[in-house]
Length: 505
Ligand SMILES: Cc1cc2nc3c(=O)[nH]c(=O)nc-3n(C[C@H](O)[C@H](O)[C@H](O)COP(=O)(O)OP(=O)(O)OC[C@H]3O[C@@H](n4cnc5c(N)ncnc54)[C@H](O)[C@@H]3O)c2cc1C
Image (cartoon, rainbow, N blue to C red; front, side, top):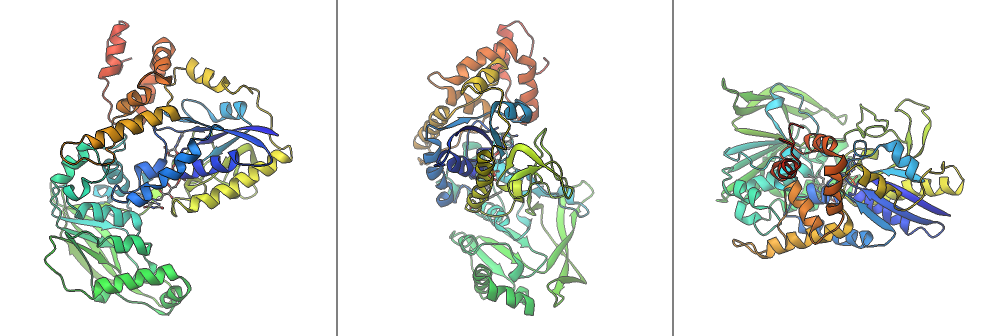
């Protein structure tokens, strides 16, 4: 049987799912991979910290998948806005949603709105065009709430010097902000104990690898009850994390210029501000183990003098227009692979719709975990196809979807375009006057598009389409998807067509 599948989201989950589908031995499956950013790779590009080249290197194996002829990347397309889910159902035999997560969960304590979500900072330092270009790093003492790997990334980047990070792919604007970083002390806070921390051992050890950083733990925070000991015995990774923390707790402070203190049993209860609204501290309440797997407050409060607070208390997925969404769990309701009509018990299956990755099970787990997700989901899809359960699409031509996109002036990017952007980033890295390196990221959305179009290609056809038919729609697309846009290039086009300003259109 021959099938055409749309996969929405070119992060690891979407790429692994595409790989399994195109390699299927029983059916001849072709995949179109839709991605809202001009470049693929999801949180590997815009989440994994720049000083984790080993993890960023996973991109190499994903490259091999995207190189395959049965897979076609269509970037710079937001599904649910540029093209609807029902349209995809009408053009494909099945649709797999793998839209991941980008936003932060809120910090629900008084003053919590003054705390910065880790995702905002990650978006900045990883050069995501949807996030800030400059970052205020004037605080000498900083709090990071959370004891998981994202909290480790944020703390490590805050404690490193800009020059240490210059060997990585960070763009110029990020280096400029980090160069002025004043942070000397970073306090990380977890409300429970070492055995309940969400770190992975390798990442926790890496926190201490910089010569300018010393990691410290108060020996009083190393405490386990019977249940915590059981968890340690049952889970090798938890035990290793506890061992690393115990080593950190045995040290005396040295003369390293940057200190990261990891605090346990301190529950943040308020972000403290002065009359002008500036952050001046974080109040925590000391907790103790209750012997039954939980903790209880002791009524002992501490005010930590910090001038900036970050919270890394979890990422959050966003709904996709036209797809059911579980507003409590922030996932697409599913039975392990099929999208369900709602989160209510007994809800039926949505025909032809499947889900995988973080949007399927919530924002927990490493890149490797998305592989097993993808297997479960694609197995269901293939079984449904074999059982004849997928309604046939009305459009069957391979390029019908491209005709639709072009008719709307959707400025999509392609895999060929990624090669050009990749080449431009590598060239920028090699040519960097301060520190030549493997890659320097290109940040601006328009710059990414223009590099993807270099030497001709889809973008060129596209700009024509934009000016011909899609002006109002294009403006809307920029306004809602990009926080900071330089309209000048578009304005030049628009003036040429006798209009005053794109933003006013
Ligand atoms: C800060 C941070 C650091 C991390 N570091 C590591 C690490 O060091 N090692 C590790 O193994 N894991 C790490 N992870 C976890 C890893 O990133 C995730 O496990 C993985 O990215 C989840 O894959 P995904 O494909 O489900 O989601 P994502 O990677 O989020 O990919 C989803 C893709 O869908 C696209 N998309 C969303 N909505 C739409 C739409 N409507 N239309 C079209 N496209 C859309 C997004 O742009 C994105 O490209 C980290 C995560 C974070 C947040």
